[in-house]
Amino acid sequence: MGSTADIRNNVVLELNGGLWKVVEFLHVKPGKGNAFVRTRLKNIPGGQVIDRTFRSGEKINDVQLDAREMQYLYREGQHYHIMDTTSYEQIVMEETLMADVKSYIKENDTIKVLFKEDTPVEVEIPAHVTLTITETDPGLKGDTATGGTKPATLETGLVVNVPLFLNVGDKVKVDTRSGDYLERVRE
Image 1: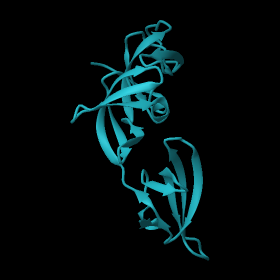
Image 2: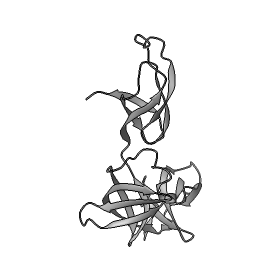
Image 3: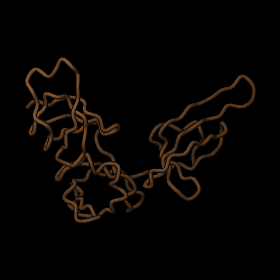
Image 4: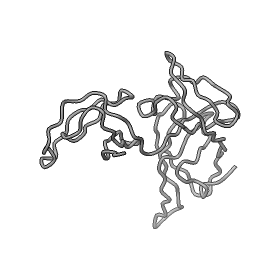
């Protein structure tokens, strides 16, 4: 049990029987009246986002989640098979838990899975991933001055807008929070 002073980004709270992750928070001290904390909360594993205001000093029920390094093995229909990298135990996860990250991971990637007791509740991946372009229009040499973009399909099926000079087989860095192209990666 904690108080509103413990609210930080990525803290998980238990509200109304569900788990909610703090996405944003703001401590507000108005000129008159009591201080309060304005938060934006994301339901895990559902993904619904709500705004909630807590009075200063209000008790909150924060939850400790166990983070484990796991390796994504393969997908079979609506199920994702992953393996604990320390115990080599394999578990099967539903697609609802992987919905936000499935476009950014490929087989054998390492992911972080958050567990409440022995139940997986959320999957975390790095802020940036490197993926290979599998389909796009041919690039033209010298197409760097205009700053134009074209759609490109990556190895996971994700479609992002990339600069005109990129071709099939090029590796690109993608921001997993926004889904945007960041830069070309050279080996």
